[in-house]
Each structure stands twice: as structure tokens, then as C-alpha cells.
Length: 183
Image (cartoon, rainbow, N blue to C red):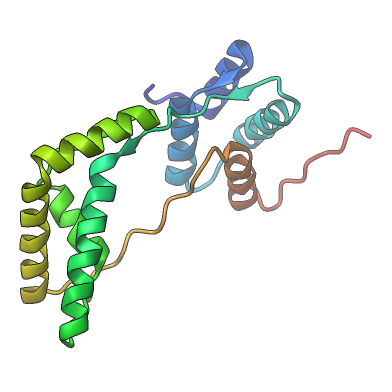
């Protein structure tokens, strides 16, 4: 999906009865990049909000998946950082260590518990030494070059929060726009 207007996206969602993750992302991108939305865009967002609330349009959830490598690296990083912090004055950010190591390790995605268990067993058998090595290297680099004055990435929202997101978009980009009650 590329460069569709909010009105076209809402029209498509109403026609299909679905708001896809790509459509949702495009609406967010347009709103983030616009200095000001037109009245037509506000009205389209309001129409989308109403359709989502009534069920006329259903938000299609993103497929849930996990990267098992993340949990394995975090477990290793937490253990190693705890050892270092217990025996020295050093303070190490586990997130920095995990990101460094994850960038040098293969992802292990799974969409089911069975798949995740398989990936965990495979990683422990084939990749544990590499995981430990990358975490160790990340800690050594961090001790030499701490990331003290960098701006952290804000935390992600979790779950399917389309209604809240559309509502927030309306509040942020249309503070003087009042929803007309149909009572």
C-alpha cells in the first residue's frame, strides 16, 4: 500500500469491511507527516471510527509471532550483567547488550507454542555458544563505550489498539473537531 489518501483508505475499508495493518499504518503515516489535516480527512477518520465501533469495519490483527532469539539473548544478557554489577561499580543497560547481540545472531521466529519450543531446543543445541559469545562481546563494547547520552526509543504499544489509536489521532489532529451526536 503506497500513498493512498485517508479518504481512499476509509472508502476501501468500508467497501471491504476490513482495516488491514497496512491500511492502519498508512493512516498513521499520513497523520504523522501532515502539519494539518483537512476537514475531509477528519470526517473520514470519524467515519472510520464509527464503522470500527459498530463492527461495520473489522480491524484485521497482525499475525502474532515471537522471535525466540530475543528471549534467549535477554536471558543470557540479564545473567551476565547481574554477575558484573554484583562484583563491580559498572552499570550496564541490558537493552543495549541485547540489541547489539541480536544484530549479530539469526532470528528464530515462531507463531505457535510448539514452534517456539522447537526453536528454543534448536537454539540451545546449535547456537548457545554463539549467543554467549555475542552477549560477551556486547558487554565488553559497552564497558569501553557506554551509550550514556543517546535518546532511547519510546516503548511500543501492545495488542490490537486500533480504536484507541484512531481516537488519539482524532484528538491530536482535530482538537476543535466535535463529533456530532445522532440522538
